[in-house]
Length: 294
Ligand SMILES: *[C@@H]1O[C@H](CO)[C@@H](O)[C@H](O)[C@H]1NC(C)=O
Ligand SMILES: *[C@@H]1O[C@H](CO)[C@@H](O)[C@H](O)[C@H]1NC(C)=O
Ligand SMILES: *[C@@H]1O[C@H](CO)[C@@H](O)[C@H](O)[C@H]1NC(C)=O
Figure 1 (tube, protein in one colour):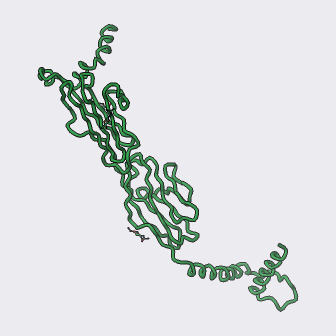
Figure 2: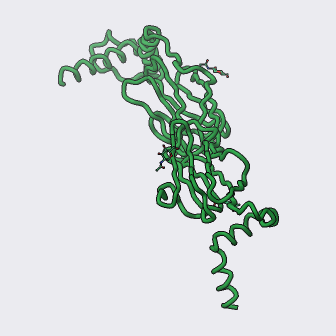
Figure 3: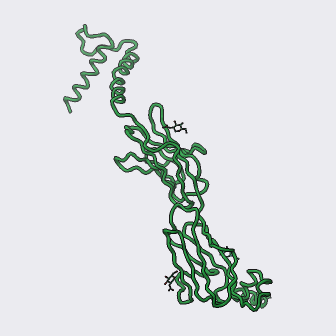
């Protein structure tokens, strides 16, 4: 410690010594001349910078491992990962900028945006500075810039495309069946980038995935983004509104009429809501109580 301080002092003394041109005099600490600070600053510049330049020319060149103008597609509600691999980053700092409004999202591992859905992901010793966007929304679509501080800064640009996954029940939006016939509904999740974790089926407002005792069989294949609803022998009580609700996609509905073939007139004249009222009797008590209270 003492040796170190001694050496430092020596260097400083030597510097001042050289700058002021002193040295002939016997005084070990010469008095400052009128403009020594400027001169010593000059001196300091020439002393400090050449080694740094050497350092830069000796290190392998910094470059991006992620292709410029990469497209990333994510579905609404999911987590988007925008990669940015930088080789030989040195002491460079990575910033992510949303180009739409030049909003600074992250610098290093710090999120600057007030929107905490944005986060830079970087594992120690890795070369990747991925931007993670949680709960992707449609408005997140656009260009993102991964910028590395250097002289001058260099950037690559990534485009985030946001798709909205939705459920789709095959066939027409209304189905007409005779009592006792088989009701089969197939729901597929389209425009997805990730499989649904689960798919719920609703009959009107009731969740029916586990209603086996009511003759309902639901089978879901998340990997294929498919869910099937099977009622081998449909009865009048099975009529109504069926909705397929994947956890990560917009739901889809279909209306099922169960009617006796001998009475097609009822089918033609009835609107879905009218049938709904007749067959379920759900709205009837509500209407009655309405009359009574008046
Ligand atoms: C990436 O492409 C943009 C133009 O789309 C360009 O300005 C930029 O310099 C490119 N970055 C690199 C590292 O080549
Ligand atoms: C439900 O349907 C699948 C085929 O869609 C069938 O393999 C399975 O046995 C059925 N389950 C019941 C309880 O009927
Ligand atoms: C069926 O239910 C869904 C979800 O509750 C609703 O959005 C839709 O309007 C209903 N359709 C009919 C015809 O009642």
